[in-house]
Length: 196
Image 1 (cartoon, rainbow, N blue to C red):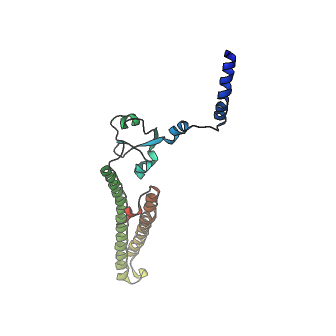
Image 2: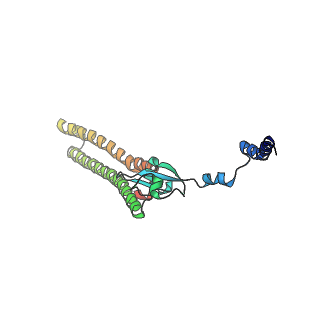
Image 3: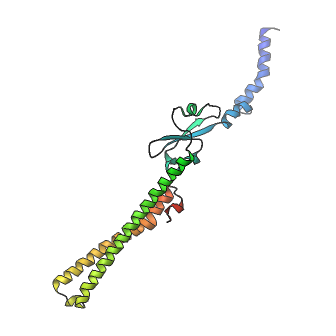
């Protein structure tokens, strides 16, 4: 057979495959396999600065998910050290470490709520004390008009202090019932963490 006829025959035989591949109509299993086998690792750093790598975003604690970085990996890529590209980095979070992280986060949220409740209780107590002092001063004279000028001035100062303390009470109540629960919800904190 002549060389140019051989080349023409080879082109005719391979033309349908080349055409199908160019138009995207053909795709062998081998071509799709790497895409199907593609998996990702997630790298994140905890509050102590320790870098972790895990095979699922759901295994990254909620607090650190926003900072997690996705890294492409394939199951046949080798050992954990090869896949991470760094030595000494743990591939997954140990269950005990995960529990410790969650316990720390829970304690932080409970402490924040507890401090806000203590602030509220302290402000309410100051308001009650001021109110009792005001009532005692006013009770000695019946009506404020019968009291000497110095007592009336003191009652007026107590009224102003009570108004200031009432604003503190309102702010603390808002912190306890709105601000902290909303911040916790946005951070993905389980609702039970804020219950006592």
